Length: 349
Image (cartoon, rainbow, N blue to C red):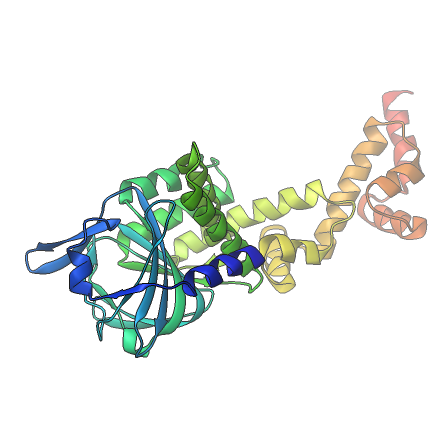
């Protein structure tokens, strides 16, 4: 966050020239150009990706830093209002500070700090300068480039792959997408990735576009994992199935030391959510399901290893011998020692 705020302070505080929007339309050095198409004003991207920082100050000029090469194009727009226009590219905006109001098609929408919004190509919109007081970070991408990033390296049959496909479906069917954080602490992750993208874009060392593509993939994964966006009822049910599998895998991997807070920190939902989720798929509470996993692993160790029972107890996460014997006996009808003796009799050992 410190790196990001340093970058932000440098760019928003730098000196800049003042231009009218009309003047900038005729500037061939911009990272995009404008066209009139059937009476509509279009912004058209001249490259795969462009990044910019904008500062809205209500009645004052809009301060803009556009990164076209290693030197940013810093300027201000003096027009009383920003023009209504369409893009031929995707625009992903992150609200760093304050609030920004935007008319998307015919609807006035206000976005607050730490929200992101994605506006699809060909959708008419207008930033309402006179009622906005915000600093925003824009990443503009050609649709083909965005789709390539979104669909690349999707882990098959996983929650992350499922979420990315949902995002693609929602993007294709909506004029815009709004991302609201499910937890506030994700802000640092988002701002860190934005600062990494900006640093690579400004430095432009060999292979910088591949590195940016990797960072943007990470950004999308943060969005689909930590931000809320709309789902249909069928998709919500499928999401729960994938989420349960992720939680189940996590519990089987960390069964020795896992606590409910670890699930909250990893998957960004409340403890009550995980209790309900596990109850839905197993009929057990979180604590009962964890005991089930530990005892199942302990039973397998009794059967397939020669480890001492006290060592097995410690390995599956129990340090109270009385409690371990109690829950094991309740589940399998025998103490661990009796269970092992019975197995030896069956094997003729």
